[in-house]
Length: 342
Image (cartoon, rainbow, N blue to C red):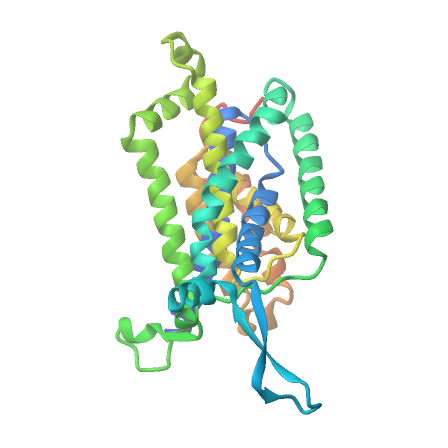
């Protein structure tokens, strides 16, 4: 039983990343009708917001010790984060919590990137066929990852979680299991909670705010909302910025789990598109549900007992499930009639 709970937890944190990326993809497709293959690159850019922020606040000052010497007789170098010399213990805290604090930087940066991308390129392809949208956004994704590779190199850049959130937590004790039965990485649990808050926030925004209600109405009938004198295109541009921000925040918080490199976005993009299709094109609840479902199934397929019976099943389980679901439910789990059927 403990092993089952552990695999569900493993699937939830992986599914959280799938769900967050798929949520942004569906927001863009549902509002603008654009198949955005550059969305994985937004996840990567968010991760590199955390990398850049950490590099900036970790800048060190170097002084020579007047009393200590090295084995070679030279003065010992004493390195101290610049923020520590400015703010003392608060500076050290900022360096330690650089990943969660970098969210404050990533929100405006990713929103601006999203709006710029939509105004500068995507809007010219609204009325073009989906094949052209896929080609141009896929090309944009390649350009973005090559820019990151140029400035940050090809190797992954590790980002540490805050010291108090590293290591393992005894999750099983909370569920009544004996100690040590369900050990679970603390930061992965933090990531799941973070993803749940972001997903809940996006749904609450769309459901309970006037802005969100107009956007949902525009998703259902864009022309009618436009006839009411509402500038629906402007609101959809902001939704593109929101979708970019969601993807970026998902990337920021994922950096302690998987060290980011320039190819990070592509690794998640393909699976996230499968998630969107399985959930149903244009369905936000479907994208989230499919993200968690496929994450959990992938986790169970990664168990040694399963792989010994079906070698390689963990690599194909997501695509296998997608085929089965699309054969039985061609519109996906929660897809609507008329979406992507032309």
